[in-house]
Image 1 (cartoon, rainbow, N blue to C red):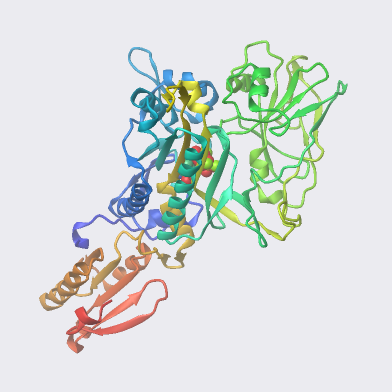
Image 2: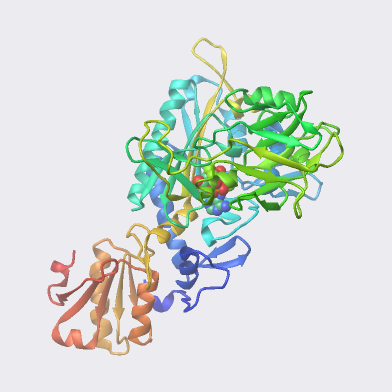
Length: 563
Ligand code: ATP
Ligand code: MG
Ligand code: MG
Ligand code: MG
C-alpha cells in the first residue's frame, strides 16, 4: 500500500476530551474520529487494526468449533418481553419505535435473538451441541461513555452463544471458550489475567472475565500471589451485614443475599421476573422491602454523593426508578435502590473497613415509600466492605495485590435462564423434552484495540504488537522525488510484502522529520529507511519501533538478510 493513497490524518495535539492514552493516540494517529458521544468512525488505519483483532478472534473461534453467523442489530421488543429484559435492562437499551408504533431496540447483546433462532431450528439432541458467534456492532447507551474505544456507546463485539444437551456438555463448551479466549489474548500479545466475575445483567450461574492489566482499567482485581485466586473486586468478597437505621426508630432487618436466598425467591417476593439480579435486599420487620442493593448495568438516576469517608461514589435511585427497573406494580412498598458496584470497584476505598451513607445531604434523597416522604436517614453499612491488599487471600491466606484491569472478554455459563424463559427445548435420547443449556461469550473487539495501546506506547506514540499493527512494516522513502531512491524503496517494499508482512510505502512528498514522527506515532513495528545517502552507500536502515534499535542492511543482500 502506498501512503500517498492512504488517508491517515495524524495530529500533533490530542483533543481536550481525551483522558486516557489510547484515546489520545488513536485520534492523533488518525485511526478514529468521533462522530458524537461514544460513537466513532474508523479511518483506514483504525479499521485495519480492528480487522486484525477480529481475524484472530475468528480464527480461534472457528478452531474451537464455533460457527460464524450474523444477526440483525435491530431487535423486536417482543423478544425482550419474553425474557423480562425489556423492563429489566434499563436505559442502556436504546429503544425505538417503527412507523406502526411497534417496539424495537438496538442490540446491546443477542441472547434473545440467538435463542429465538435456535428454538426454531433445533429440536433433537442430535443437533447439539451448537455454538454460534458473530462479530458485530453493539449499541449500549452507556451512562458515561468515555475513554474513546474503551467505553463507547457503539462498539464492536464478538459474541458467541453455546447450546448443549446436558450439563457436562455445557461445561465442555465453557472450557473450550475459556481456552479459545486465552489463545486469542496471547496471540494479540496482551498481558492479561482471567478472573472470577459477577454475571451482571446478563445473569447466569458462573463467569470469568479476561482482564488486560493496565493502570487506566476501570475494574480493580484481587490477585493472590500464592494461589490461583483472582477475582474482580465487584465479585470479590464483600462481607456484609447491612443495617439501615431510619429516623422512625431502629428496624428489624433481614438481609437477603445470593447466599441466603435464591434469585427466584427474591424475585417472587418482588413480583418481578426472575432475571432480576439482586445482590442484597433489606426487609423491615413487616417483611416489606426497604432497600434493594441491585447489581447490574441498568442506569440509575444520576444522583451521586460521597459517602462519609469521602472515598467513593454512590448512585442512588428514586423509588420511581426502582419501580421502573424492577417492574414492580405501583403501590408496592418500594425499595430504595443503591448501586454499590461502583464503590466496590473503586480502589480508593481501599482500607475502609466500614462506611456510612448519609442521606438527605445535598442533593440526595432517601425516600421511604410507606412514609411517602424523604426520610432523615443514615443507612449504615456496618460490615459492607471490600477486600483490600491488607487482607489475606480468601482462598489460601496468601498475599494479595490489586492491579487495575480492562475487561476485554467475558465468558458466562448461563444454564437454562434463557431457554426456560423462551421455551428453547429439544427431544433427548428417550424422546423426552429438555431445556437447552446455554453459555455466552463476549469479546470487546474495539476495546481490545484500545487495550493494546494502553499496554504498548511510549512518549512518541503507539508501539503496536505486530499482530494488531495496521501495517507490520513501513518503508520510509526519504526522497520520493528522486526516481532512483523511490525505485530502491519500491524494491525493498516488494521484498517485504513478498515475505508475507503487511507493508506500507511512505512515498509522500514530505520532510523526513514528518515521516519519522508519523511512523513512530502510528507505531509500525518495523521501519525501513531508504534515503539518498544510504542508497549511495548501498545500505538501508532498519529500526525496531519497540526497542529503538537500528541496524543497517546492505541493499544488495536485503532479501537474504531481512528476517
Ligand atoms: P463493562 O463492565 O466494561 O461495562 P460489561 O460487563 O457490561 O462491560 P459484557 O456484557 O460482558 O460487558 O460484554 C462483553 C464485552 O464487551 C466486555 O467484556 C467488553 O470487552 C465489551 N464491552 C462492553 N461494553 C463496552 C463498551 N461500552 N465499549 C466497548 N466495549 C465494551
Ligand atoms: Mg457494561
Ligand atoms: Mg463488566
Ligand atoms: Mg462483562
